[in-house]
Image 1 (cartoon, rainbow, N blue to C red):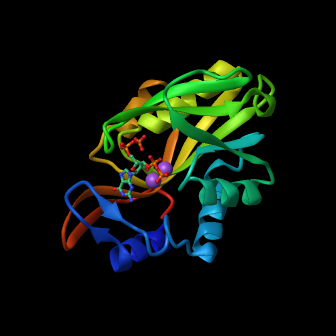
Image 2: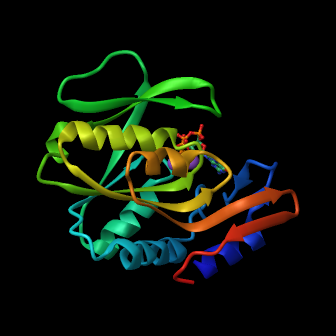
Image 3: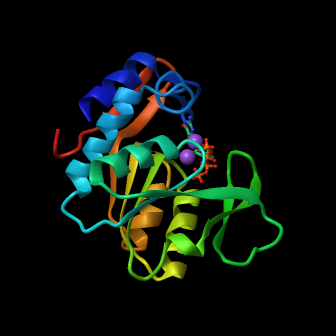
Length: 194
Ligand code: G4P
Ligand code: NA
Ligand code: NA
């Protein structure tokens, strides 16, 4: 997605070879117009599929799940995060290991909102280690719903997230795919539709 790559080049802060800050327009302050365009782009990619629900995890996946939900005309659900202590009743839960925080947490959603009749698109801001996305995929499996794909705004292709998901047979699409970066330098992989 060209407009997204341009914004990343203009405003992204490359803190190291692995960490990109996009706080000015994606995940702290949010450019609402761009977020809606991102939703439309997810519709272009996944709109031919019979999706009934979008699933994401709090916090910074929410604005893109909402935008995709608006574009596709379906609701979105965001999994809630809590400390990994007890499993509550009436929820689907999956453990997630955060590599950046070096801790485990649970993500959960109410069983009321996802079931075998659903066809799910998972949406998130970053595809990095894939830990949270694999947790979401586990929740979809537990619910009996069908997972039709994963859409991410930014993929760091040099991390293992994509291969973890593809190993499970999940179709993955990212709107901006970074092959490598270093302070002052960033390289993207071209997507076919550009
Ligand atoms: P993950 O694969 O489950 O995302 O775990 P990881 O430990 O790799 O990443 C931890 C958090 O950092 C995730 O947000 C992830 O989206 C975010 N993240 C990963 N790489 C980058 C990056 O280069 N830049 C930025 N800005 N964020 C990155 P989260 O735990 O889901 O928290 P939230 O921010 O959505 O609340
Ligand atoms: Na996230
Ligand atoms: Na994040």
